[in-house]
Image 1 (cartoon, rainbow, N blue to C red):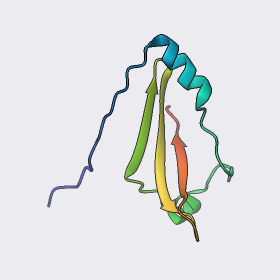
Image 2 (cartoon, rainbow, N blue to C red):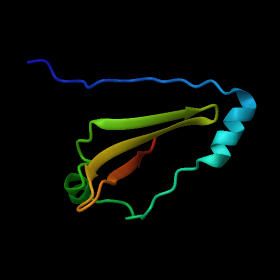
Image 3 (spheres, helix red, strand yellow):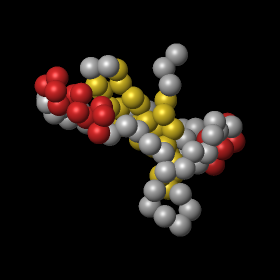
Image 4 (tube, one colour):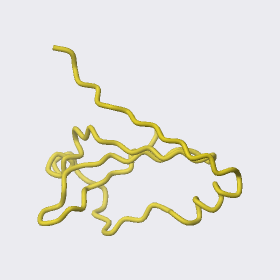
Length: 86
């Protein structure tokens, strides 16, 4: 059986140079709560070890990729880990 590679959806919103500068200042990524650098066990517990859902935001200055894990206990928020390049 072939492996499910998931679905990739790309949406582009060209806003020009001024719009790009504005968005970079307007929406910096900010965690509601920083849980530090997770161990492999924590990544597994939080659904991040094998996360299939990802969000990539690309700016002129580069891209940020977020892995979307499991929902937090008792809420609708999700664990998120920024995937670092390199």
